[in-house]
Length: 230
Image (cartoon, rainbow, N blue to C red; front, side, top):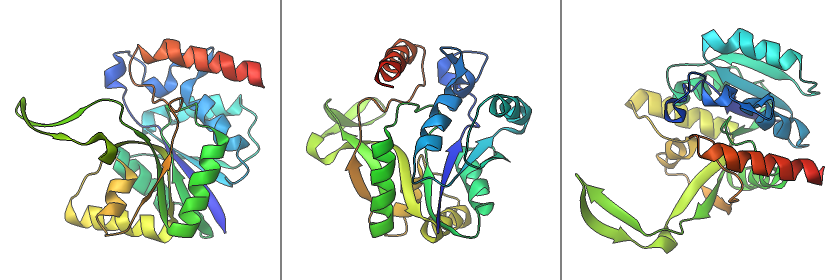
């Protein structure tokens, strides 16, 4: 039974404010999504990788992949208008022996290999697992700029990826969401609607999602630190 990593990279990068989608921005001469791909290519528990892309970006990515020596199967898949559609299309193309599916943001290139290992193992044993970090800020529930209440921080985690699931469970969650017209912000939100318990493992402050210009200096620092360690 195999483990498939799905990396949706079909976003347009609106928050970055650049003409180039954030996953294709250069980080020390290499596109951000390639840095992310390298982590999953190095992870022993991952057997194959699917990249979900906008059709207009597929040729560009094929050229990037041709320059990158990767010893695991990488499949480029035409994504949909939303992240949810993109991941669902990758699920539909999953190899028949797929046991676990791991979904990871293309713009989180600093995920540790041990975090991938842990979330896969937790999904094998419990069916569904994600990474999360505690909120250090006070969290307010609001409506129309009015505070309705304060949510205890000990009950809050900030979700990260990778998120891992048994393949049949995730496939059913996507089918259910499509049938009921539900759009989630992550894969876990779809699985939760089935009444399935999702395990939360401690993530990492370094596992940042590069979404805005102010994230780039920190990303360069982390990349330099990783280069020193290798």
